[in-house]
Length: 553
Image (cartoon, rainbow, N blue to C red; front, side, top):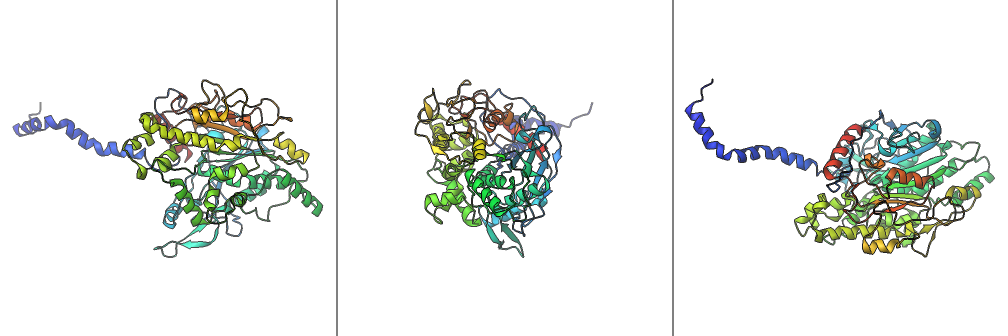
């Protein structure tokens, strides 16, 4: 046995009463690093409420897909912030999915100053030189159990590298102050035409029969902004134009499709001729987590308005021209047309809106921001609504009600037949605003806004007409609005409901498919926060996202 000197025994006896404090002092830095790592400003992370039992770990199948660099940058216009060419990831469709496409635009917030954009240009969100292989998950998954409707389709992820939702429009490079010969480029509006050009020429996108064009977060905003332009481009590129009379007919059919062009530049004239047989594709758009509201934060300030105004001004952002005309303003209020609530009702292409009504990114960074705090309890609320005092939680309920209210014009839109059949008939599917509340046998939209009701126990609060479209007036848009405290659902296990919300016993994957294939109207709106047990918990969501992000690369 080793002898212990009296001096050591004396020291141990004096330290022992403080052993707990010493242990905490040593462990504190590591605990703080762990806590801090969960609170980083990462748009891909979300923080839903705790206490859910609806959780199953899901393996992520499939290989990582390498990045494809778009070498034809339309004369050097289509470039990332650092001037590198844009990139995307492509996995070819198989079997029945060989002529069908999912094109998904990556998200990742925005940059609103030259220095901020310069810092971003050194990362994968500003340079294709930093992009790594990408594993397809969620709506992009090749696994039929996870993604039963779209697993065999051609799947594309367009990487986000311009910091302005693919909408920057300054031709001249910008010198970075304090950096010798360092420039950044605000040309994101040219990236989509370049990518579409590449897909048309090298991957036979022109032969597409069905295309779901979407995105997540800032990528969802980009999908909204480019939606009508993309629909019109696909319609024009899919039909033969062999003479001036054919060109005029193509233009007429383009107008009849209702796909009014946004202000994004058109694809380059180098696009090759369309195929010899005309079969108009079914083109629809979806946005996952892209409804960013122009609303006051808890301190009465307009944080999102400040951010979007700065982005629009800095990058000379291309916005929806119809929105500018509708607002009768070309300069002072241009920023409004970067907010979906101001231009979505003007679009003509069918939309699917997937969003959480207590969006964790907006809660954390635009609604309950630290600068606006009037109580330390707000910090607790922004990270976990389940621990939020009731008097403060009511503020978040008003946010939910405002989002539903601002989506009301889309919910009330009606068409008299399916958009594809109208295109084939050469008619214009003009959207009209119905005078009645949407839904039959329910108390309608006003009831939710005032009373906070929605989907409960598998009941669809807004039930529309079911069955074939025929001559029945129906809403062309789909809605999956969950009351979970999270951000985006389509690229995670929440897509198929194993780690995410169910509304009316439907996952987001089922809802998107029912809407896209026009099986029924899909207008699913959740109740107020805390009543949906399928929402994942904070810890479960972080573990799931961390695992999937490590696989995604």
